[in-house]
Length: 119
Image (cartoon, rainbow, N blue to C red; front, side):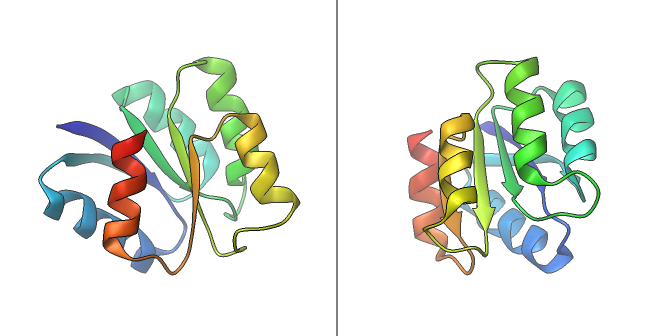
């Protein structure tokens, strides 16, 4: 079972992610963060296999947190979850910085699971 940290400032999205991940029987959500700084701290504390992180969060955003996570651990597996759609500078920047994938909100459960299984 893969350990996952969820980082999203939307409680509703975080709950939806957790429900999908836990319901699959393949993932265990070990912690939830509300911003990028919390995500980094929880990554260091729990050493998850995967981080699902929103791009737009208050305080430290997901792109900045992604940079920090990859600097801490070049093998960090981060999937960005965004409402920005599949195009644009931030989408491309996330992949360039080391995100293993990007998925747009709203997402289908099977689409999310397929992406996470491939990471």
